[in-house]
Image (cartoon, rainbow, N blue to C red; front, side):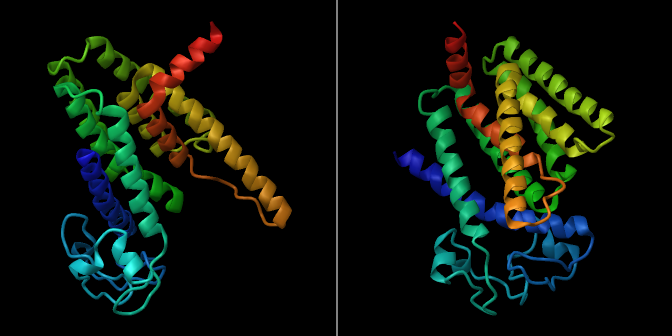
Length: 287
């Protein structure tokens, strides 16, 4: 229980980092220091060093006041400050505590699913790698949901790390079949998405989706990648139908596009943590 609590607290801390990282990534990609910050106000931050993920202290995007340590306690600071900046009273969106809670919950879920019954060197290393990938996936999901883009600066290093994990897993006892399954799944998923993008001339899938599908294959292997894609396509279809129905009911214009990345990422998380059980349940139903 103590270890689970520590992993959950780690998730809260990582969730706080994710909130800052997503906004700073957008500021960097925009190539300018102005834009919509976490408070929903125009940022006055000047200089790329001020919005670096690895450098610079946290600040309010509206008033540029450096935040004290007491302003940065995950979840508790937002509640204590009643969702407003201590210095300029700008509203801090509920996204911040929600992302922290989501990340903590996913970290705890990952620990319960992957590590509680697999205390082996391979299991511990796989869990550590997974926490890194889970952090990356949450960043990608938030970024894509808001700005319809899966940035290469996040995706490409994750792919490199996933490729490096394969020989590490072999050294720790992973059967070669598992490595082969991951490479084949990456090739099939990435290639399949590339084919869709080619046929639709980029209207069905973007380059980011292709790279994300490749990463999914590396993380999951053949069977679980199939589960992830099924979950992603089904959930995206249901949400798309719901959005169209709501738009007609409210007499609003229906959205032309919806970000597919968050659905792929949700499918990846579900497949990683419970893919084997889902496959077993499906095969039992067949026979």
